[in-house]
Image (cartoon, rainbow, N blue to C red; front, side):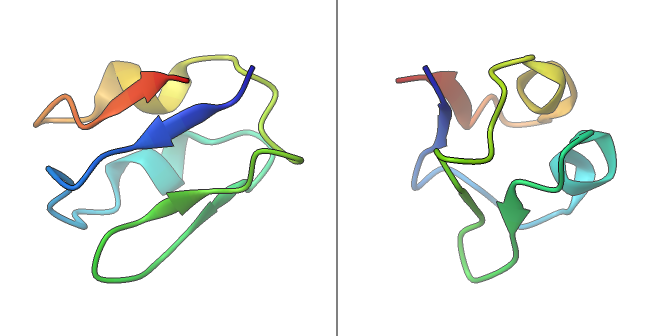
Amino acid sequence: MAHKISDDCIACGACMDECPVDAISEGDIYSIDPDTCTDCGACAEVCPVEAISAE
């Protein structure tokens, strides 16, 4: 199951640096491609505002 980024995202980029499969895209609020995400959780661990969770 892929992770999801909520509206609490502050677009800091910390999650992009940690994603081993480049599943995260930039934007006003970042997004995770569910077809690419391997559900490793690395992004959620580094999110400073806890905006990433498992769907």
